[in-house]
Image 1 (tube, rainbow, N blue to C red):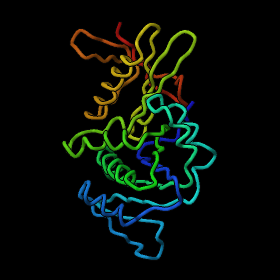
Image 2: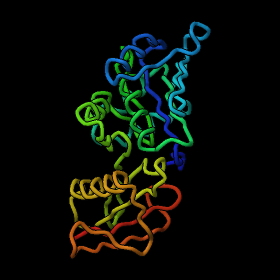
Image 3: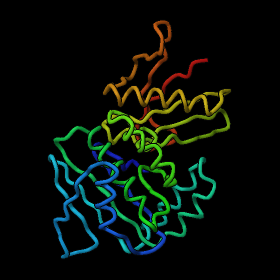
Image 4: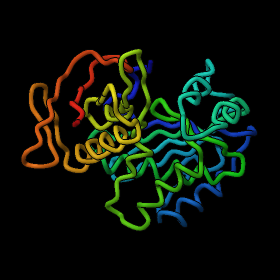
Length: 255
């Protein structure tokens, strides 16, 4: 269902715009006001559509792309957002996008992820910003910025719901929830399926596991167990993914 393109350290987002223009000075000011992040415009006036900053071995590149995301890719993933009724219609209307990428081989992935989300959140304050496409999902600006704002209240907060998409997958036999976004943190994607369970409950269960894995840098392994009490032992199996490409961890759902 999803492409296996969110590999370790690949923090990339497309901020969709209703018009082919942006306000680079506003973005620089918003990053300073929102997060106390100083973005130096290294290109000065040589190219008004790009912004590249290097801080603490992290390279941040932001560029205005004067066209929609190619191949209707954003529209395709917007159709999977069960939390936003007008996701596809809104996404179809975009005329350009801001490409945001954060790179840095020797920097902590969680720190890089936090910086990435802060920058994307400030990009979404642009007048023409209508959505953000990242990691196989299209998010509503208000939702993305609300999740990011947790980091203003607590600098150690993990904006998991901006980092990881919890998708729904159904077959004739069962329904389940899968993660999409764990691979950029060097972790396997996770899938949980059950025949007779509430999908909201499965999603909450999987959110707890994903948060645990990222917060404590845990590596779940094939054949081991996980549990939220001393008695609970839920099986873990690594096998071909059902809703994704490549492998995924299947975690037994408690009944």
